[in-house]
Image (cartoon, rainbow, N blue to C red; front, side, top):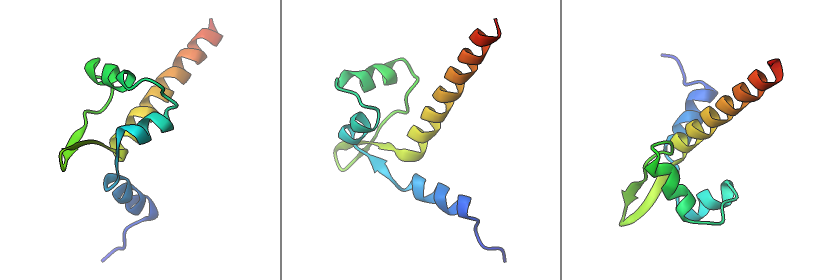
Length: 83
């Protein structure tokens, strides 16, 4: 039987972490609560999960969203520089 790799363990740990709105706002340096709501309405940000009556976001989904957003931005910058 093989043991899980470090990346498997890290992925599993990210799946188990849920963030509240305040943590998201601090992480992305957002001042307005409605910014996250706007991202969700535009279907670009992960939808929250209701846990114990409060909204939480799965850290793995937020990390994936952030990485894809950075990737798109880097691609746009590269295309502009190539012109």
